[in-house]
Length: 369
Ligand SMILES: *Cc1c(COP(=O)(O)O)cnc(C)c1O
Image 1 (cartoon, rainbow, N blue to C red):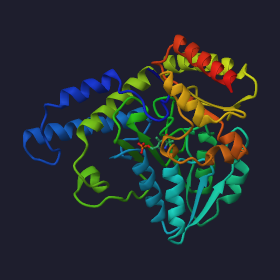
Image 2 (tube, rainbow, N blue to C red):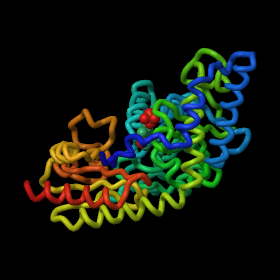
Image 3 (cartoon, helix red, strand yellow):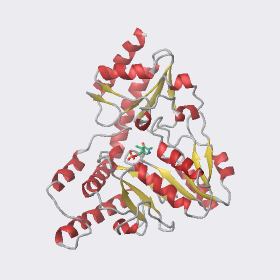
Image 4 (spheres, protein in one colour):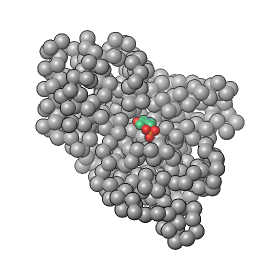
């Protein structure tokens, strides 16, 4: 099996696997006062410290463990909705957990503005600047797009939000563990991340909230997570998240270089075919989105699956939905071309041989059409 759908989820890394297996025999609730409870709460505290350090957070900033990236994004917008301000600015290519959450708030009296992107998928900074007014609660722009891989100019966006006194939230789920992210240097007020996109378990993530932002819970109940997220902590998940992030950050540069090489060899091969277009610019190394003009991506996906290759037509959350990708359309791509687009998302676990096999399989499929 050749797995090139790492933007949907990644394999659990060895470091995370060790934490998980060690904890399977452990029993303790972090809220219990006995020594097993204390061990659990110490493990969570250590994980929080590790993750904060790895994203450049300061000691007094909040970092709340959540059930994943979607919950973290929901909480970030919920926090913004309680500031008293009514305008929410997002980009036109946000993940559905930001996009649909923002538009749900529209039903509750909020004004949603979407900032457009150019043909490479990069947000228009002048338009963003003109959209920020005194009533703006938040600017939420993702770090890396999960469908096309575009990396946004976070530092510039952060500087602009700082200058305007507006909270900047970034959905960094597709970026963390793959690119160097520093919340302080980038003036990020809130940041979402998810363990299963960098070698941790599914169902666990985190929301970073800078000290000066009034943090509020989305889920009410007990006093866990500094009263910001009720419910018994996902101890195994949290331990896996911290171990995986540490592993990903330790090997970040070497893996980035390796994945970039693999990625270039795959895109070079695919672009040699007729009527193939690479979508998006300024891309994170692992994500390649290509349009095979005149070919149904759904048919290619099924063909590749039959040949043992796991790829994608776009966002995993939307793959049951046969509509053309909203993200590709935002780049100015036609419905027809959007339905002819495939995503290959690579990881350091892939090999040159696999890339050669994928390219050959795609080439022969294109010839049969
Ligand atoms: C996967 C993903 C999410 C959702 O994270 P979950 O942990 O699966 O809820 C949000 N944003 C982006 C960019 C993603 O790639």
